[in-house]
Image (cartoon, rainbow, N blue to C red; front, side, top):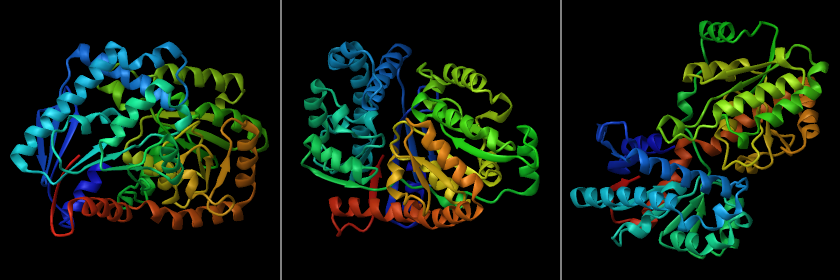
Length: 413
């Protein structure tokens, strides 16, 4: 979301320049392109490991899957949290240094990894925070509530991804300015693949001409619910002998940074065992990482898409599949579920109920009129997550904070 947003705001003269501060211990110190400057923060190996473990604890807890209660309750007194705080301190020091050089108008902080930064930025300039993952106040441990509330309160505006999370943030006790803006993508980059690109995709993954494809696109992680899809698919596989399930995606970016958190290989092994146990070994294809061209081919080639996440901040893959007018079956626990009118532009299901998914799969696979209507209506709904719409909403937040008298903005991500 960030890079397309900055680029489009610069094109529209909403911004004059932008600095984007990001963690990358292996990249160059600075990269400049088209008035966007990417400044990298570096962590040593030891600090990186501690920061990564802290991030993982927070992510698991806020997704409701952290099992070690003592680890959770004592989180803010652990060495790993010190490393997490150290990383945020490095980011804040770099941002303040850049502010002296550029005199920014506004600071925009993205996601829980940088939540403490507003406390560390010694300036009265406006600070915006965007929370990308789910926010369910019932999942926040008692001993976390006061520190999290303090962090949120340091921002001028907090943005979440859907209405449900906005309501939950208020139940949590946050009384400051809060808004929801649906995540968005640059829809112009999703093109119809050529015949040769489709042929290459089919050949690479052993897809035959008469195969019907159900597609899941997600990072390989238990929270993404690929196992739910396999169980639901296995229940209907015999009734649709030429349908195959294609599972696209690999590990997280964190694993590639050397944080050592990638669960992808272990999860893939478990999924392969599940496929074997369900008796659908010849019907499930794991693609691993797909290039953008291959992803376009996957969307074009499939007959339907599934978002099976156990809990999901939003789910932009639904929007991507809608751009190809594909019917989609969506977990009711995903933020994007708010855009689904069941039976009109998509189908909703309980990710903990394989029978529910199986029923929806059968409905789409056996009724071409339903499938076509879902795809066409989904395509219309996709405009709600266009870059243009998102940019206007984001720009309005900035203008409200900075003041309408300033014609052009300088912003730091």
